[in-house]
Length: 199
Image 1 (cartoon, helix red, strand yellow):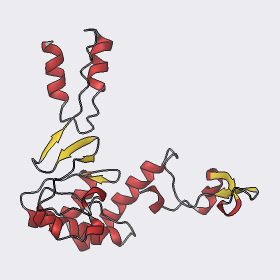
Image 2 (cartoon, helix red, strand yellow; image 1 turned 180 degrees about the vertical axis):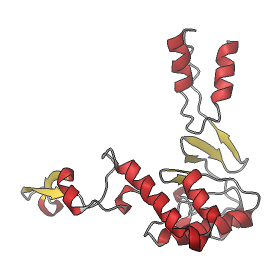
Image 3 (cartoon, one colour; image 1 turned 90 degrees about the vertical axis):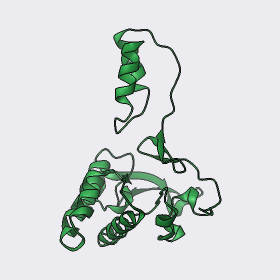
Image 4 (cartoon, helix red, strand yellow; image 1 turned 120 degrees about the horizontal axis):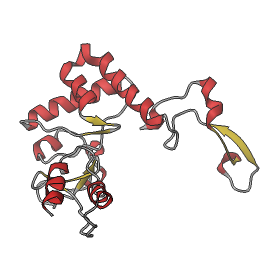
């Protein structure tokens, strides 16, 4: 996602690196400057989130408040996660969001849904990579990972990988147990805290 956002020309000197000329290890090492934001650059996440939200704000007039709200509230950097009452509502929202983001040269893809009807509305190149070659009617659906969660498309449930290691019942052990589970959205936090207090 970061490569979708250009670095101002006057800032490119901060993203210099050395590499082989023409990407050929037999050539001399020369100095390059990145034109786009990169993963290891600290402000890249903030720039990407800002750019995504700015696109939503500018597109609200043409594409609606629901699309803006989806981008602003249901995205974590480049992962969007949303539950809707019907496949038709999901398709409508995703298609409008794709159109809106394309105005800023951003691509909404890697779509995964538990609804075969919704998935069939999008070309396979827009599907999540492990769903592209599947027959959605007959093939078993693989787990989807998003925002640190595993989504079981068949049962439409989130699952967590839990480490069973016993920690001492101290403040450090308590915090270590709670923080060992990556739960970006806080779904499991009430259960973990209750379990730890009971233990």
